[in-house]
Image (cartoon, rainbow, N blue to C red; front, side, top):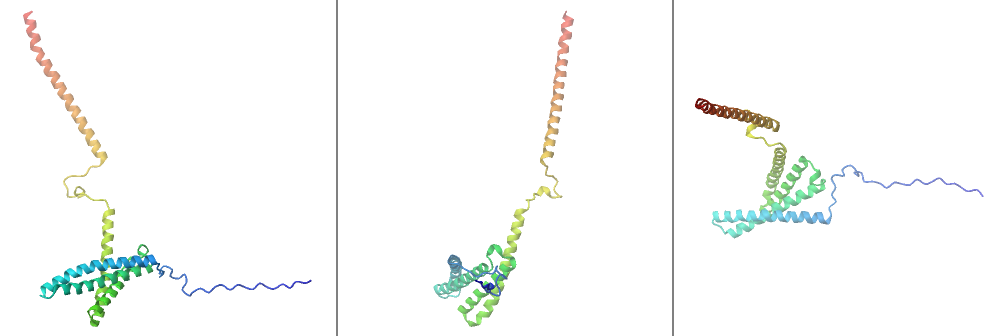
Length: 225
């Protein structure tokens, strides 16, 4: 009985998305814990900014002879919106770009500038439609420039901490010089040798004084004899 052999059917590979593996660093998967952390951080930042805004609003109301409670409430609401939206936008961008530990300075500046633009848009919407575009430009610029200057300041602080601290004795204009351990040990040995030599000289002087003090007594004894 002849068996009919059939050629194996080729298995089709699953189609991959066109951008698969191209930019894995910019993943947008966010778990429930990540969203919860971002929301908590944003609310905390907004609450702190809102408290500062309430203080400034109350002061502005007193200066303008207006109800300070209303000014404080409005200013606190505006500052809360600015702070919370800025932190939320920045945190989402940093997470989607790989996390804070895996991004560069340029990415930080971009994230802060974008987050500043979002917060400026929210602030402009609160104050009126005419303030949206100026708010985006102003707060976006402040966010990017502030982040750049902050990172530069942190880098300079780390470099200063890593470098050994220099003393005023290391300056070439200083009349004194800092000695090494070996030089200090040699200087102590020289001082000890000098002290020993002075002690031996003093002993010789004492011995000669004793001999000279004994001479008259011996001569007087010989005369009496």
